[in-house]
Length: 92
Image (cartoon, rainbow, N blue to C red):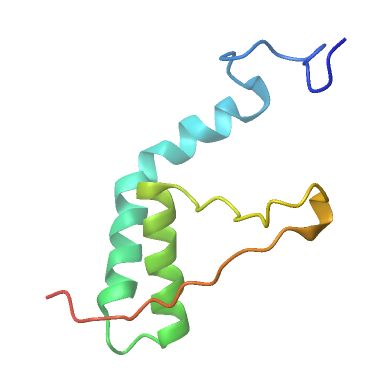
């Protein structure tokens, strides 16, 4: 068998029954949760760390989490990620 070939478990595209119920219940709060994140991000009275965390959560959900940048070495332990500086601006 070739390295990396899947040999068992769920077939690709099959929903995970273990998490389906919780996703169904929490899905009803998606819009409200996004609204809370936006409110936290925009509120100047909120600590900057909380505002940044809210902004990152919104970006992660809308654009996906950034993939780690690798050095190109064959050693998997030699991975590094690049840091990004985000400036919080008034969006109103």
